Image 1 (spheres, helix red, strand yellow):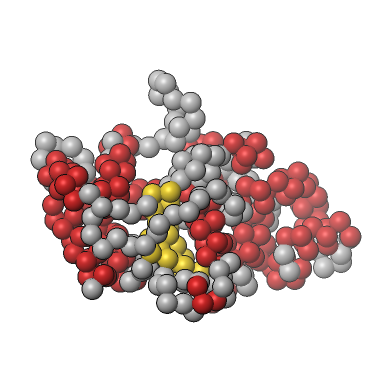
Image 2 (spheres, helix red, strand yellow):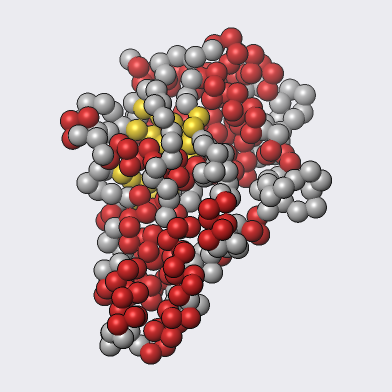
Length: 319
C-alpha cells in the first residue's frame, strides 16, 4: 500500500442531513437558533478521526444537487425534491428551514478548521467523490492511499474496489455502527460481484428516491440474476438484441420497451470521475487554520464542546 495514510471523503450533505434528523431539536445556540446539525456534523468528524485514523480528509460538496446533464437525460431525476411554492427559487432542493440556516455555519466551521470543502458547478458531491477516488486509485502503488467514503447514499457503492482499495462507510445504522462496504459485503448483501455491477443493477432496478424509473417489472433480484448471467448491463442488452434464449419472452419485452431509458440510465446512475477539482491540499490539519475565527464561531453558536473535541482529535492524529 503506501505510507501516505488513508484518504477520507465525506459526502457532506448526507452527513449534515443525518445530523439534522438525529440530533434533538432542543440543541440550540445561546440565542435560541437551531444548531444541532452543525454540532452533529462536527461530532461525526471527530468520531471518524478517532475510529478510522485518516491522514487526509476532504469534505465533498453539492455545488449542484440536480445537474443539468442528468436532468436532460432523465427529466424525472430528483424532480420530486424540487422546492415548490417558495418565492424566488428556481429548482432549489427542498430543505427544512431549520437546516438551511445551519449549512453556512458548517461552511464557516470547515474553513476555520482547515478542512478543504470541494464542490464544482454542474456536479454533485457524488461526482466529486468519484473523481477523488479515481485519481487516488490511479496513483502508483507506493504513493496510493486507501480511500474511505462516508455516506448514507447507496449510489456510491459503485465505487467500491478492493484492488484500489476503495471502501464505503455506510451510515444507515448511524455513525457509531458504520457498515464497511467492500466487495465481499456487496456480494453478501446484493449478490453483485463489483461496484460496477452494483451501478448496472441500480440502472435496471431504478430508484424512486432519485426519480429513476428503472425497467418496469425488473426488480433487484431479477436485475442481479441477469447481470450474473450476462456479465454487465451491456451484456444484458446484447442478449436482448440477439434474441438470447436465456432471456424469457417477458424479460426481453420489458427490456425492449425500456430501451430509451436504458440508453441514458448509465449517464445518470454512474458518477462522473473527471470533475475539474484541481490540486487540493487534503492533508489532515494538525491545528485550526484560523483559531480566532473558530473560537468566535464556537462562542456565537454554543459549539465549544464539539469544537474542542474536534481540535483535540486533530492534535491526537498529529502526535
